[in-house]
Length: 194
Image (cartoon, rainbow, N blue to C red):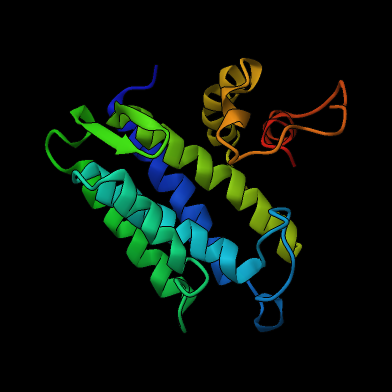
């Protein structure tokens, strides 16, 4: 298990990667499709922004219903300055994580109540998987630290194996075989149904 500081560093690194990728989206790419088949680039970026804002709210004691309602605005969350909106969400997530006792709390998520430390790892995993989605959609190198892929894989793998990852409806069951020589990142995105 990672120490709290290690996980906070991973949150920072995964969120920094999201911000850099958002900064690489070209003006003509906002309506482009993504590996998240229901979302274009703008909605995917909005999902990342709202996800980090929602992460912060749940750490502060927000309800599952409030969290769910936040996603109704993910299509507009990027606003007219997506990088600034993303940076603001990142600062909020980091500040909420750094509050004394924040990672010792229980969060009330739509899939159930669980420790805030688990919520932090979920946020990192979401940042990693959706960074891959965004990089793929806009045709740039992901540039992701292998350790971040490892954190996300360690979270997703046991949940994929027992089916819990797919029972939420948030991730699709993989439909293609995984090559034997797949990298850790390729294994991760495969688990996430990409």
